[in-house]
Length: 412
Image (cartoon, rainbow, N blue to C red; front, side):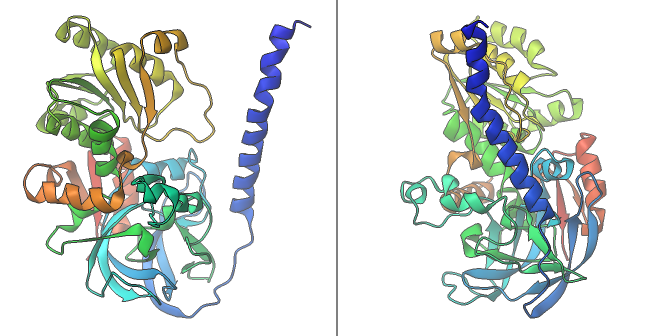
């Protein structure tokens, strides 16, 4: 048989083996025997629990044990309803089940574990779904968003090992991304908590846990938007709205919001979008006209689900030497991407990933909240609707129906 046909098949085998290994790991994590409750219960609380892929969130009573070394017990004040939780719900992001949902949140410290310094009872915190140890190579070089503790995020239990959250039958629950903000109380590592000022409202403090910081940083840090730029934002939910604000604050002349939802396109205008289109195909002619054929300086991809067929259209929307930023979560097993490699190389373009806005949580979260307090960053306006914990399924139905920029669960 022709070697030119066989060679690609042989080259693909390591990738296939990697995918098989990843699937095997996920299945093992999901099927592992539950550890029974062995530590003393500190308190009972309530949480939204996901037990099976595709099942409704189950609001149930849970039991919480003492925070251990380097951990704090937090009373949750607000939790943002990010699309990433839906990725866990629909199975596109492999997670250990059963789990407590939520990874955007803000709360008040009510107890300290052994050896905790830098926090006191009564402190207010914003969660960071990316933990930062402050010691690894990445933290030491100012890249806390790449901290080595991130390797634990999809594993069962806590960063420090073991479990602190259990269901009413004593079976362990894993908090999503080591936070689990869809709960009235949560135990989390101090590496995942950022102290904030007490006068910051809980809703805005929750939004900077993930969506706002990630979207804003996609424009300001990863795309490097400059004054006078033309920027296209594809997908105008929580991430995209924050990216629009980032592009506007950075001085972009043209900010084009692309979304099939008329509600989101109209909403984008109050956050800084100058133009809008329902699709990238329709944005192509618009951007060509406004730039006299040069095209966009950067295209930022923040759709609800990032799929491989979105890369090539973004590539053709981007000028020579321009930047495409892939920010939204893609299905974990997706390997196929449509990309014109010749055009990418010969036009000197860049395709970049972006995690947590390519910035350090401990500096950026307080920075963004200070901008909010100064009236430079619109966070209250991003909260379309608020819900109780018992309305968590209603809130996600509204998100999927394009009724919200961001829904927020508010706790008493």
